[in-house]
Image (cartoon, rainbow, N blue to C red):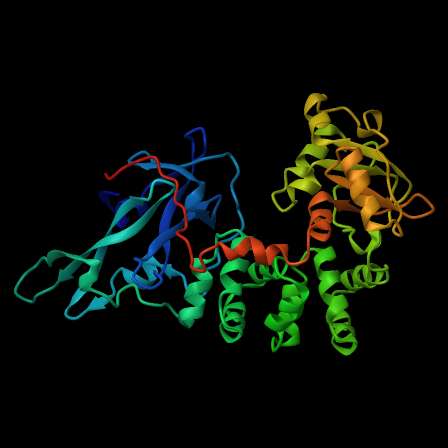
Length: 424
């Protein structure tokens, strides 16, 4: 089902509003990805200016788009600088003012389309301008995008770069399903076109044997950049499967601190808690306030299972820490006054040692209804924690990821665009 047209130039002038309707910036441009097969290109986000910087606003973050502005669904704003990715089409840069025969593109008419489950914007009309020496003003005509088939063609980087752009906002698990349906050669091409963070997310969703095949051929510098974006526990599993010479070479090329962490994780025996733990957890001291702890776990980079609790220790605050004191669950933080110190509200949940068998780890998590359990050495120093999702990954039958994706269609689904307004 399609809606009325809204023109790109009108969108580019709209204010960016927070969830309460207050202006926090302005939309400057639109980001599209080419359509796959017979599908039309579609809008995946907006370039906006906020706090004197250009940022990317995913279309799924927009709650409504109308003459008042683009209103965010929530109060969170990603202020990381906008960086165009290979395969993406920046409307103002790549399409507007582009020559089509003896005419130029002056505007694009976009239409909201819904399939009952999601809504997105896609180009429907192209406004073309023709200038003549006999006229002071250009003449205009409106055509269907089907009449200018090359206008939204594959951008710089080739088809695999375009496919990587189309996969940009899919869940990594779903991306893995798409990738598994491709021949190995195309998998490698797609991996090469992805940015480091996205490729790292993909690798974490694949078995180690498939990870090794995909990264085969990447140069050391690129590979180190990708590996440094992976979660430590997933990275340890991958590096454990690498040939010794390759593993040594990568450890030497890594940042010293990361390399030290990896050597420690690789020293643990397979099938034990040590082989499952991650040192990337929320750690605080007993004098840390509730307000400070909430500010820390609010960081969107934390996994939900990690952000569900704060581990309280004596300094130092990086694993291996000082003496482990206890933890404070997220819900308890919400019930206490902001100035309350964590040392006064912590609970003594059970911990385990690195040599605890995997099955016992699962039993502890289930027995105490925990999302994560701390791992301490014999001296009581916190080494990290194990989250319930990692335990499930190990305890589910071998090949569960592959079976889960058998029913998945190996094509790129539409990127959802949540909109509350119609045409203008």
